Image 1 (cartoon, helix red, strand yellow):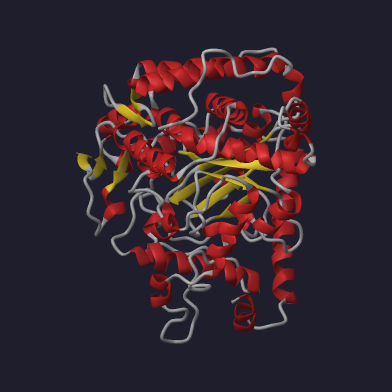
Image 2 (cartoon, rainbow, N blue to C red):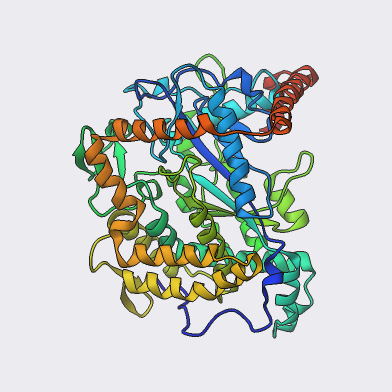
Length: 525
């Protein structure tokens, strides 16, 4: 895998202290399907009582009306961000249609044989709302609707300016010392991104929680998965099928060659993809036989959000800025870690220990040396990722490196042990052992792979009798947690106010649309 090797000595510079991490911010985006009482995907619209999915800042929809997304604001501690996520789940659960529950797994619940029954997300009659729905129609004809029902957890993290200022002050390369803080932060965040890509198999092994898939997800597809129980399919040593060839894939994007060696090159690659026609998508046609649009355009990416990646550099857009324009104007503000499965054992999709591990992992990626990724290394990374996805818990599994093969277990242990000093650094600021305990928990999973979520899921699915019954069992358990959750009167008032404000904002957008949607779309095209 030609990842940078974890050295035997600590990668924490002597001048780094816990105070430099105290301004770390984190936010979470968690996706979850709504499931009917019969175990199938909900056909009901997004609940009106939750407000407008177009304008609500914290509770919205992703691809489908039935695919909810919960978005926290950035918070100063893991406990605060998880508490906010818990409140969002409580609010959503309280407003679900009768008999519905939140599906607890990354790979979807039971889907109809006809994928046309997977409803697109609807955002009202404003031009921007119709544009968002059209984008989803384009995804459907390009990749099929089933793939879009996969859920994940996105973990957003930013490190304090003080840390970057100290890192820059201690650089030996004078050209790096002369960069503005904005440009230096972007430079370091791209180093983090490259290392995250190199080391993603660590997350897949430790947090992977999609070793099985319901047979209804793969209707009409050829595959090598094996029957497990009651229609569930699996691979015996799989960790996260969501992250492999049966997960969220975009064949057109593999040819793009977008790289993460620097911000300028990354933005140039994204811009080419959103402006360049792609012959297979051109053949699909822009409009249907009735003249109704069926995709935004025939480009490799309809819009920037279509680019699927393990991790994204992010900057909050202002006004009508695109994500790329925000990055170009103000540099990288934070990174979005996207390779994380929903934890089916957590009512909110992620546990405290997983969050602490992800933050330690991100800091490790930031501080570790990060050379540019060559084409040969990228190919090795992809092969190794596929191995961990499909055979990660297999005894004796070997991974590739530039200098030969290495035991997957030895490789995982080497990197986790190198993260220990970073966990201790986080803990010093908290005066507790949250981060160190998280690393120790992950080390146990490497030593005994039966402790991984993926191994536990396969065993428990056998006991409960397949995807529907196991997922339904967990969904019912989580519903009991939401039922007894309590929020303050002030918080309830705040969330009630968001419902009203979001509906007013959607109405204002609809009333402000002066051009027809066709004109709006033609202007964009």
